[in-house]
Image (cartoon, rainbow, N blue to C red; front, side):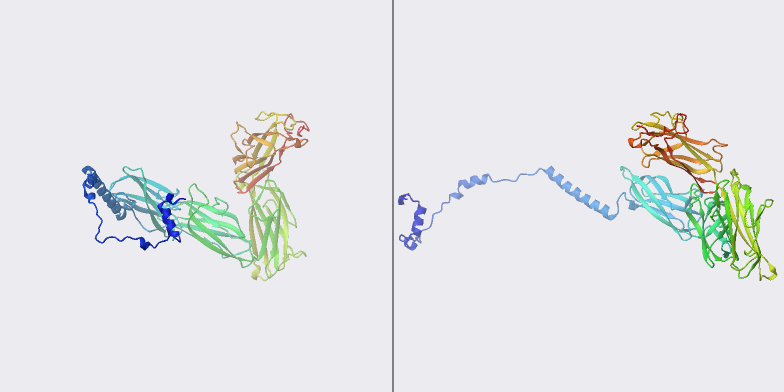
Length: 640
């Protein structure tokens, strides 16, 4: 590059980095004259500056109305914050549940069964009126209507209407509360209300505790403190009403120990053999229940009976839950001087339930538990009851039946021919009997009573005074229920269709008839169940039938709800019948097979007299419709 073409910067760079052209910078410096001073023009303060200042930004003036509005909004917001804080934190809300008070005036303790009177006051301390106010009361378990103690009281609601600001509304309530002494019950009071201009509903609750004092019912138990195992003894429960008011629906329930069986009770139990209804009781009245039963156990064992008294629940439910008082009674078991053990057809239940006309094989086992010989031992059985078939009685082991006195007697010996029983000697005798085929439908007409008496004279007894051991048993004749079932095609309430014999992969319908008959006492809670077979489809029940019948697809089960099967149904009264229709579409795998239409046909119900369950089973129904006029042998088998 020519020297003339170089820029000043390039020239300066060549000088700076050249070894030959470098010069000391000091040689080229020119000193300033000390007298010289730069001349600065004053033109910046001239007219141009004045022009610039003319365009300086000027502040705009704000309208006075906007200023006033802003100041007002700021003041209003501050005031609102102060008022809200005062209302919220100071508790001076114009409508607050804190300013609604529920006060309850009444005793804290009340005797069970006595009328409890409470005064309830609702006070409105708000600055606004309460509108559509209601007082709701939730009562504890065991509460009863004061006017009718047989009615349970669970919940009530009373309309208070409008409660003015600063005013109050009062109500008086009466209730009877049952419970065990010392038990604490809670009554919940709730006030529900609204305020004007709002759809919101407000609540205020209060819990009131009441302690149960003395029980209005007291009772005691009278029974022997010691009984022999297997010996019949009596227990009496006495109930007394100490209240000043009538008590309705008094109930007693017993819990029996293991080994105890009830023979009879006066009055009769209303549920099972351990719940009694004493009805209404007036102040000072006493009612009693007498139990007769036997307790079986080992020597020196103790068994405890528990008895509860209370009032019936709503609807007369015998399993009452309201307990007023309870008591326990302990009985010690001693070894009897002579033990007796009776069994009917191998069972020793009491009462023994048997169907009409069935033979009852009775075995009586005895043993001498004395330390001495028992001389001239004798055993007698006295049989009573209109259901007994006297012609059915047969005896064994030398027993003699006297039909005039209905008594069977044996003279016992020790097996060697001597009329005595040594200590520890034992033996048994047998006899048979049955009931008549058609006993009365009443309870007494379907019972057979048996009393067993074993007597003898202990060897060392002064004066030869005999001892006697007694046992009583009851046999009850159960209801006679007959259940018949049949499958049909050409007759019945349904028109059936399809080939007969049934053909594979083609539909054939059938009618199923069920019929229930009862010649004895009525059966409660009776029903029949049946299960449909494979490839069987439910088509419905008879539209003309008034019987309740249903089908549950998940279990493939048909249920016929009979309800109560009256005594005499099928004889003196019409029988009970029902029909339903099913369809069969057989598979090729069922060729030469008679498919099952319905199986597991079962009747079940409760005998109203014996309290036992009556069950009847019927065989399965197949395509063998032998009761149908069109049926020909072989038509039951599926064909191709």
